[in-house]
Length: 297
Image (cartoon, rainbow, N blue to C red):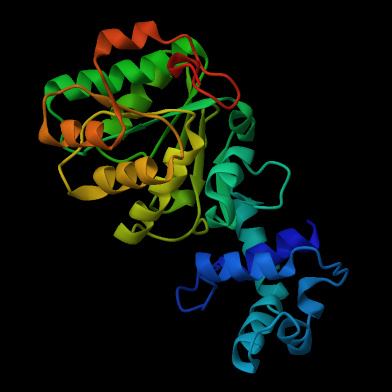
């Protein structure tokens, strides 16, 4: 593990202790910007408060950063527990870190992703599926159709493993012989290791479910998919609405919303989403490495 990888872990992971005062995404973003271009050859634990203060931080915050970077023994113990649970870290500077996340989210991409499962799936182009937990029958059929479509076309299905749309699409994809990347908001280590699924978490591998984690991971689902299908959304309510609106605002990926006649779908269309039906899935010509050819981009 490189010193850069160690640094990201020490600054962004709780290591099972919710009281560990890690840096926020915004603070990590600022620190990364200040460090860019500097040639530091020392390991994270060897950095002093003076080294940190030279980046323009006050004494208190410099001590906080230096303290986090100095907990290398805590990091080693956590890595050992993670290995026993089948979980490994992928930091923003690791070779396996998804380039598309860095490209689309920039310094707002997670400092570290924890992974359990087949890492090779990360190298497969993906399409994402999001949607409500309580689905109407037509919307459930659409979610399943997207899952099958991903498998048939050779895409990894990116979703969130939540009840409803997520699991419907994931199960349909797996049943059709496909592969799934599942961003979880609960304890990563509790999920069984399966060859066709890669579970990801941005908050370590032992943390329990929280609504904040569920909302935060939505940006990763939207950004990792080369296009995002919305099976069902509630107008101005819930994580599906929140994540999709942010995607449309920042332009992470094209959004294709099921044409179910709902107020939510019509409002998303006004924001820039494309409304489609189940039969429209047959009309896609596919996805290039970086652009959706269906839209002539």
